[in-house]
Figure 1 (cartoon, rainbow, N blue to C red):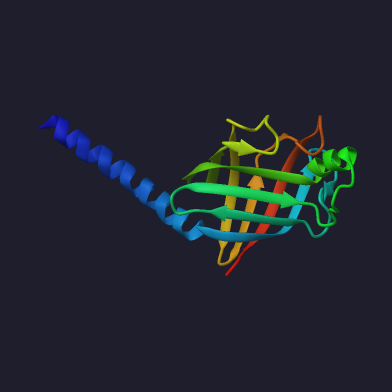
Figure 2: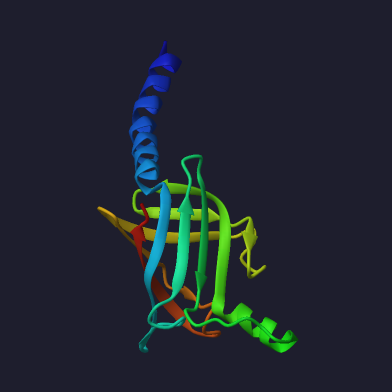
Amino acid sequence: MRFFALAVVVYCYFTPGLAFAQDTARQLAGSWKLTSWTIQSIGGDVTEPFGRNPKGRALITLDGYAAFVIAAANRKPAANDAESAALLKTLMVYTGPFTIEDDKFTTKVDISWNELLTGQDQVRFFKLQGDKLTIRTAEQASAVYPSKKVVGTLTWERER
């Protein structure tokens, strides 16, 4: 009987959190268009690493996967190997299964443009207001500005 009572208490304790996470995942599911991306260097300036009008899309699925693609606005087709390599500096891509806990969105990266991220957790904090999604990173080492600590903020609009 004690085991049953303990099981009921554990179930009641964890079920609301799981239901909240599932409800939030449903609200986030869909296609999102990037409208801005800024990086605040710790102790430094705010920059727009891919320019004022970066291109990007986030795809969040009901079955718990996310894909993020971000590119600089003015990319041109490469004419040689050096230009092809340079295009990688104006692109960010990763995908993977995600979990939600309160305002924390964690993607377990399974594919990435930067193999240093593959297998790692990308932890983000989000705020959803209608069709506007704001995602913020924790303070972290920058993939864009080596040797700097930064906080990135990305703003997305739901695509219909």
